[in-house]
Amino acid sequence: MNLELSYAQSLDAADSLAGFREQFIIPEEHGQQQVYFLGNSLGLQPKNTGPYIQKVLDQWAKYGVESFFMGEDPWLNYHDHLVGPLAKIVGAHSAEVVVMNQLTVNLHLLMVSFYRPADKRVKIICEAKAFPSDQYMFETHIKALGYDPEDVLIEVSPRAGEVTIHQEDILAAIQQTGEELALVLWGGVNYYTGQLFDMEAITRAGHAVGAKVGFDLAHAAGNIELHLHVWNVDFACWCNYKYLNGGPGAIGAAFIHERYHQDKSLHRFAGWWGYEKNTRFKMEKGFVAMESAEGWQLSTPSPILYASLRASLEIFETAGFDSCLQKAKQMAAYLRFLLEQISEANPGKFHILTPAAATARGCQVSLLVKQGGKELFDELTRKGFFVDWREPDVIRLAPVPLYNRYEEIWRFAQVLGG
Figure (tube, rainbow, N blue to C red):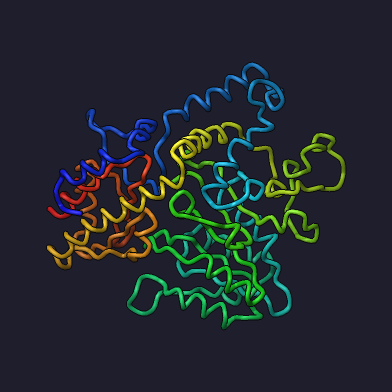
């Protein structure tokens, strides 16, 4: 690697995924394309999103409610377009993935099934200062069961003077809680620092003491390599509007390991869309769940939201998720190289919060800017860079493989180091 513009341009010229940028709508200002580094917050709109939604609207106009059964793409089977591509992205079998609701709703639903406090086994281990999707869900769900969150939650924090969490501290907390531990529910990637956690090791440790283990993959799905089935994870939830470009408020998704699909002793909240598909419309008394992750569905889903997500997933299918991961790693390595050069030349200007091991595998990088951070963020915005400001002193960015260029990373570094 080197610091020259020509090097970044050579990387773009050799990029096998470069053409996929043309399948997205890039924000413009005064006719100039902006640099969008916010795939970790809301992914860009694929150009096919509008046409796919329009097809659903046209079907609705022509067939009305019979669109569930009629037309070239009946809505009753639309879910099938989504689970295959998503399963590849999260490392699961198709039957283990369901597209439904949004992230926090799904967390609550799966807590019903996988958090069953009894006797002394009531504790939950989670990361301190988790995103509010988790924090508020924990607080209210635990209270609804008649427990005090202060008595139930064990929050693992960074060590004094540090901002990231040591993996060994997580494993130690699991082992020490032992027979009192009912559930480990952890984030795959920390939203603030970009820290990536060893989910396989966390799962193994939780199971070793008899606990269930689940993950919030909001900042992981579509960003890093996942093997949920092989890792033996019990459940996971994620949103599809960040790295997966499903649109603002996109329909969410969940993973439930196949070993639970036929477990009739498992508690769950049920709804008619989770009922056995072949007999669903008989509407008979007594819930009979589909023997897949789809058995956790509640209400009739929106084909419009399905269509929005489908437009993006088809791009991933064509590009190949393995190729996306490879480019993401290369882009992250290039970005980190440039940041380290700037940091060496300007000591104290910023500190890279995201551990090197995480930037070697994921897109997000978080920069701690102690002096003039908001002014720097505003300057980046004026220069056409979409990045993220997190109070009190962090700038987050995430170049993603499907629509970002290496030259954009180089240009960002020029402004940052200027």
